[in-house]
Image (cartoon, rainbow, N blue to C red; front, side, top):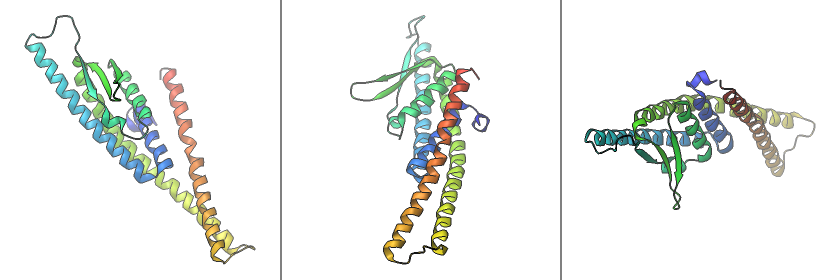
Length: 214
């Protein structure tokens, strides 16, 4: 599936959106994806500005010869998005794949920063741009898959309702109808939980392929 998004970080973004949709609902997943895209776009602008500042310092002769200037980005926008640890791992993997030296720094106040070499700012801008476009592709694909999963869950719940309506034990009282609805909802939730197991399977396959250097 990596070919669908350009690289494996795109596939991981798809898994992140899909899992969130299965856990919290499709609208919550799409909202989180939009927040991630906005954070990536702002980080891209911030990295570009830091790169220009570093270039200006070098042109003015203010950079010590042979030293590497490190820059940092405030990652508060990213850290406020649901399941930030997973997103941090995805960003780590993307920057590693791009050969961008980086590290993370968390201050006592709780703020998290991405540290990178100022000279790598153009590469970081490209990496964030690629991730932003991957979010668009992952969001579109996850939205379609979530819609299909919910459709299957509704169909299963509808079938359960038909079986109860036409079965030998059809119930007509208000309490019985409420009980039937509860069982239908439970069946729909079970269908979604069953489909959710596919995401960890993809993650394990992804990790195996990365470990093998694919």
